[in-house]
Image (cartoon, rainbow, N blue to C red; front, side):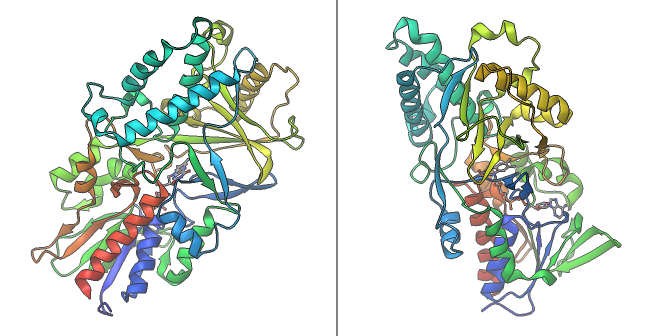
Length: 461
Ligand SMILES: Cc1cc2nc3c(=O)[nH]c(=O)nc-3n(C[C@H](O)[C@H](O)[C@H](O)COP(=O)(O)OP(=O)(O)OC[C@H]3O[C@@H](n4cnc5c(N)ncnc54)[C@H](O)[C@@H]3O)c2cc1C
């Protein structure tokens, strides 16, 4: 059991921060305070009531199998979880026609193979291709030789849609994603995910429960972490009642990579070591936003799971649609909230829609639906909700990706703690960006919080 007088501050009440707090308390460090700038806990896990049910503004899927599955099992959340394959759907072209089934099937099979190769094969990492896009284009050209002439264009366009689906996993264009991708494909099966029958937020309440409300200080925004004093770390916070200083033996920082990119110079005193700063700068931090459309009376009958296949021949007729529409790749309805449709926009398009008025988005999305469904009677939604992860100063984006020029070494450097002269960790780093196996995912956040709590428990036992 750890020393009862040891005090730890955890910055951020997202999954990583709550996992850290929970693990510390269970291990015997009871003087734990979680400082959260927002009015709510959960961070990038945010389940919100909208329309006739709940929508997930942040994390939606449990990717493959990992630590989140284990936690969810212990909280009895997996019972009615639904399997979801992100490549499934009706592939409809922008001329309103369904794509040929055999072409869709072949494109999906080939795409799964490529993803497996990219994540698993070390040979590919040694290949002359720098980015995922370069490699995929090369691979596509090889496959196209065996596709009949008359089907080639359609096959290529279906394949491009699948590339957009992959962009969603990074929040950035594939032309910026290194082939040195991280997650372990032994655990992640390309395309295969699970969705909670209830909400993702149940994970958060499950963890927060052991920490208790008194230890979680909301609307407490950390503005500076001063680790110059050998006896204690001082954390200056902006609260509803003005400035407040907290002190502790150690601090675990779980703010997103986006927040570190934006604020590390002012957040730490002294400034972070150069190699950590370089890692923060080299790793990519993507933007993925969702638009959720609510219809009192849906225009569909049995749900919609539609993949959009943009055909070059329709570009001319799309001149009146903004550029970001070409980045749209799917409209989905969910069984848990059947009167809503969801679309994702990533990278630059994801940023663009943050500044686009909701009524314009609703009008444009309706035009796209009308075009693909070849049905001018499709109604406009009754209401719309749009996420703004990039402009939110507490996140500055959605999740980390392996940008060209970065490597797993950056993650190791980012996750290493700042220690005092006795080698005691005083400032520690958790959060999805610091997990070399499950970077970007909730699995990574959970792992990282437990990892840093364990580091302290080893020191203070
Ligand atoms: C749109 C979207 C979709 C996603 N989909 C999936 C998915 O399907 N599956 C999946 O596995 N993952 C998904 N993710 C990623 C997943 O949500 C994150 O990896 C995970 O939730 C991050 O948790 P975290 O604790 O590391 O960070 P965060 O959740 O960002 O927690 C950090 C906390 O720090 C707080 N904070 C920031 N600055 C300060 C400050 N100065 N002082 C105090 N507090 C501060 C923030 O408010 C936040 O609560 C998605 C994310 C987004 C945005």
